[in-house]
Amino acid sequence: MKKITILLTTALLTAIGSNTASADSYDYKPYIGIDYAYSRTNAFGVRPQHHTGYLRLGSDYSKYFATELFVGQSTQDTNRVSEYSLKTRYQAYGLDILAFLPVYGNFSLAATAGIGEYIYKTKFSAADNHREHGYGYRFGGGVKYAWNNHWQTRIICRHIEFDHLKGYNHALEYSFGIEYHF
Image 1 (tube, rainbow, N blue to C red):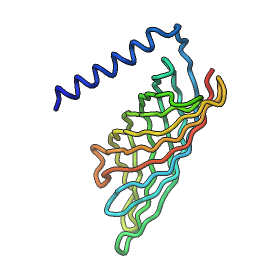
Image 2 (image 1 turned 45 degrees about the vertical axis):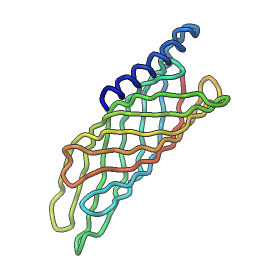
Image 3 (image 1 turned 180 degrees about the horizontal axis):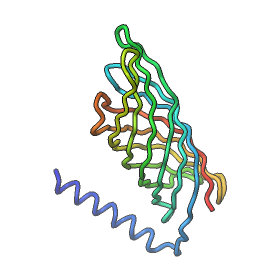
Image 4 (image 1 turned 90 degrees about the vertical axis):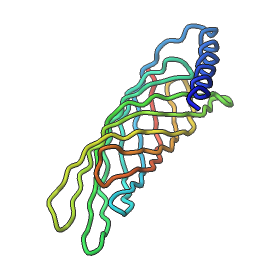
């Protein structure tokens, strides 16, 4: 299985590399973006729902690839666990790599993978505040639309798998973003 994965990855990168090499030289285009995200987390046997604002700084390397740094802050959510209430919120920051496949006109399919550090603040009604931090491995896909050379919008759904976060398993995140390319 590893050999097949390596062979397919090499073939894909070679195909994309030959397409980008034959195109005219591409100027790096830095951009800034903001996102609204809705997420459902699997934590402590309940499903907290968070509304999160993200700020993104990125750069397009071609019409096929981009990287970006992100930082986000969520709202607080309250759930009932037995006779206790569970309040959660989080902060996140990290790096995403994006790949785009132009499909029609200004529409592109998007795939993303990345890693972030997530800092969850948790409070049980019967205990003190608890702060937990760990990594989130982010994988997702969506669609992107370019309005013109500067303004673009995108919708992305991500699965986030947590590591080293006690009580937190994974999250599903839906985001809508607007970005300005310089």
